[in-house]
Image 1 (tube, one colour):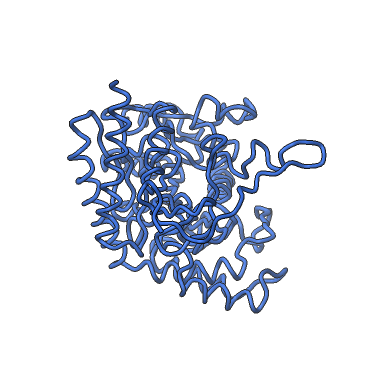
Image 2 (cartoon, helix red, strand yellow):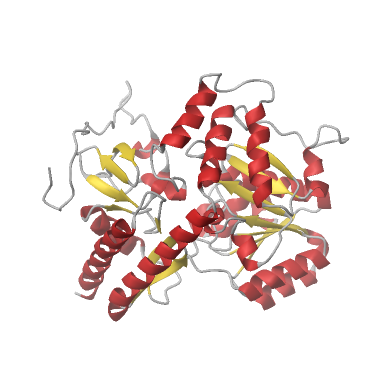
Length: 422
């Protein structure tokens, strides 16, 4: 059946599970397990997903362009990923000894990053960045970290500094003092910071397509300058590719023609299960080796667990070069199609390949209220965006689905822009 907005419905509805405990408090702070999920008191809940679609608790069908913040590059319930995960699960979900699935995953991953040597697995992108920074500090004997303004590298104390403002609440001043935050794509600022005190810095952490900073691409010139300066002063260059790894078979760094010292990964490399990974050169990664005196202690009860590793290896094998090229081509087409129609009202569409985001033209940041209104306007038209209004394509999407997605999202932008003008 079809609802009033044109979305079909399925028999998957359930009451939104917001519940209170015996003392009258919500069981989850604010009612959500992640602050990034909240869209106010009326935030929908998901009932199930299949392919490129999800159904919410009211039975509404939506095109999922959120994909759990780019994780579900193969959509939901992909049969080959399910088969891989179930096969591992039947033999046990986690152990207190190494398992062969971790080695299998590492072989698949390093085949795509041939200039790097070793992998250490963790449970999230946040943990991957935390671990990579600690490795860099240990290897260099330095404390300082350089990040770019507005970039998001997870929720560790160090990573939060780049966000500024409210992100700094609860972060010790000593941690803030150890992080130098520079403007995006400002080569002069980068050069001045590094050359003023090169012995201060252990690492430069950089996302080549930072969503929180407005999904503005790092320029090839800035990326090249970053590689040149870090190499000259023995500063570890870390590319955070937790999101951008889906944009190139060898990652987005390879598209730029740059080989960083470490790459942090997550999301698509876990097949929908918790995962994070640090991939790096052996001379850095040896800091984690138990064979090295004073090695870095590192644990994680579920790090490298068989289910995540098996599902992740299947996800990577499905995401071959042809699949990536197809998704990127579809993304480029729909981005151009939407932009042609929203440009007259002062909007643009930022991004690269299979990731894109409508934005007020030329703006550095999107007003939070406007961002929320666009999210709801898209939702009412049967499209689920990320709460930042970012969209990510998935391999089950056909050409027709992507055209439909573009039409719905264009209508949402036009509605919001018209309301703003009014």
